[in-house]
Amino acid sequence: MTSLLTNANLLWVIFGTLLIGVSAAAIGGLAVLRARALIGDVLAHAAIPGVMIGVILMGSLSPLLLVTFALMTSLIAYYLIHQLTHRTKLRTDTALAIILASFFALGMLLLSYVQAQHWPNTAGLDRLLFGQAAAITRVELIQLLLLTLVTLVYLWIFFPRLKLVLFNPDYARSLGIHVAREEFIFALVLVLVVVVGMHIVGAILMAGALLIPITVMRIWPLGLGLMLTAAATLAAIAAASSTLLSLFIEQSPTGPWMIVILGIFFILSWLLHLVYQHHNRSRKHV
Image (cartoon, rainbow, N blue to C red; front, side, top):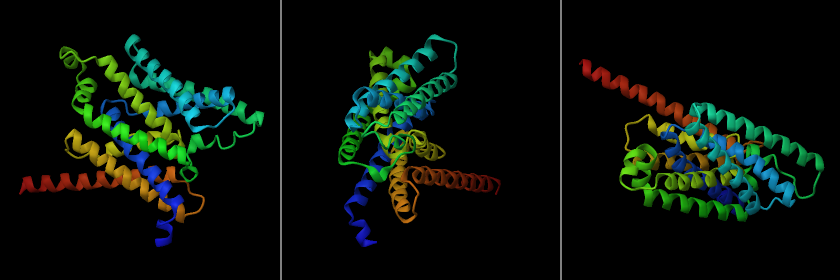
């Protein structure tokens, strides 16, 4: 165990999964509490056609290049969701489902085209769907570190304003806050977390990293700040545990383990809350 924990590659993977877990839980928590639980899932799937377009146009799997193209299509998806929910009679969940299915279908078509061409230096595109933390590169680790720092500093500095903008936009406007600009910045940070995190968790499971930690903590009567902090801590524990499990159990990727562990945390938290409620009711009857 000592030799494993001093292995540089293992520490890289643990650090990478921990970073994406913390940043996804923190920024995703606000999106979930705003009643947009599936927004992360939509943005992750919307990033896939962007990656494929980048590969087709540039013929490269450069992490920075792929993040740029994925960011573009994810922001387009976010804009379309905003337009559909504000300018039509569609409900939010309907708009999310339409955008997710459309962009994911386009991404699969482009993925099939790229794979059929057998271009050099394009192997490993399936990693975007299911994630592969063990293959994290130094560039991706630096991206994750910078992204996590930006996300946490952004939430720490603008937290009071974000609460107003996301949960009481009319009052925020009355105070002179530019709501549309603040919502765009929040969306940009959220999209960046989703796009970069795809390489670790995968597009299919990215929604779990965003919504399960805050859902676990939402069961308990906590304040918003404490709830987000606890959710990020829970995600960090799941990230480190999933890395170690994927190491000891062959052919088991880190991303799915991370979501399974978070799911177990949710079940345990729910059961404990039921016991807590039953105990309180019993005390009231005494």
